[in-house]
Each structure stands twice: as structure tokens, then as C-alpha cells.
Length: 249
Image (cartoon, rainbow, N blue to C red; front, side):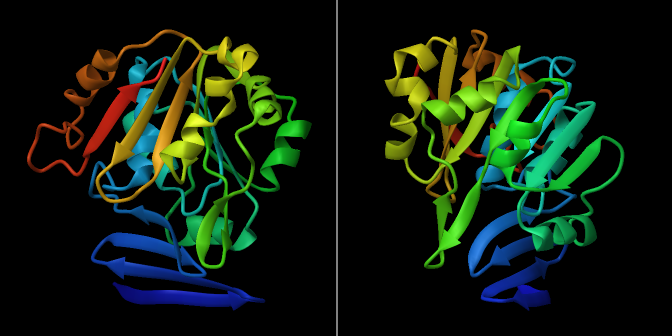
């Protein structure tokens, strides 16, 4: 991919690369975002972060919170495919916020970006609850992605405080082992807060995504929705969306 922009701030190196209309964001060599407005799916983990929203009817997901924006691929996909009223994005790295707006065109009606520490932002937030909370908080360590917050009891309690009664929490994991050690799967009191839990994994990366639903859902709801959205039907040869899903609860 061609390098179209780069910047170094202290020890952090930022790069935006392109291949046609496809854009990628790298920070210290870690692949943070890929997005192409001409395609319905990215083919990477951001598809998996978006999929749990499609267990719901389009009118049910009105307010979305994304913790860890990067270039904003999942925010673009949610706006395109589910059309919520508001998508709030919280990103610690101010350069990422600038890149998301300048190169990934992450702006316009319903998009609200906040340059802030996500944990502190949640502590201070007093507004309406969210139907969907996406936890995609990562930092770089030795040129590898590392989760910012452990998926423990305290963290899930913090997110649950701001989740509607029918909502869903979605989290990106580096491995399935980390997913299986998350609080809703090992702690009874947190587990009782969710009626359904699903895992997702794709073909192009090693990440696993978990979706913790407060209401009972079934995978057939997801597949029915996907068949109605052009470019997202996995049965179509032209679709970039390739994934596996498994019910954990």
C-alpha cells in the first residue's frame, strides 16, 4: 500500500496508507483501521464488532458508544448499515481523532468524537444510556496490540451502568482464551446480567469478538438481517464478510 501521510510524535509513529479507495491506519506498526467507503465490509475484525447490532431490528439501536475509535471503521459501518441516531466515539490519542476526521471522513450528523481517556469519560458521563457499547481499547507495547482494560467485574459493572435494559456490550479480544476469561463467563453475578453471549471470529486475523446481550437473541436473527443487506450476505461470492459464530450462553 502507498504511504500517503506520516507523522512522528515523541516515540509514536503514525502512518496512513492507501490502495485505491482503501485506507489503513498504522500506529507504531500496529494495524489499527481499514476502511473503504465503496465496500460494505472490511474483511477484518471491524466487521465482527458491527455484527452484534444486526441481531436487532434497525430501529432498536438508537444510541451507540465506541470506546477506542482508531480511524473509525466500525462507526462508519454502523452508520451505514444500522443508522443509529447517535454514535459517540471516545479516543485517547488526539492524533487518531485528527486522522479519523481528516482521512477517514469520520464526521457529520450523529457522529460525536471525544478526545479523552475512556475509563475517566465513562466515570464522568451523566447522559442517556446506550443500546450498544463497543470496547475496542488497545495500546501498543513492543509493536504489539495490548488491551487497555482487563475484562473484569469492575469494568463490566462500569459499562453496564450506561447500557439500556435490552442493550449489548461488544468487546474485541486478542485471543479466545482472554474472551473465555471475561467476567460474564466466569462470574455468576455479572453473568446473570446477560441473557445471551456469542463469540465471533474471522478469516484474516486472530482476534475474537464477544457480544454480551441483555436480551435473549438467536443467530438466525443475524443471518436473516445479513441476507437483506447488499454486500453483507456471506453466501454471496462478492461479499467480504466471512466469519464464524458460536453461542456461549
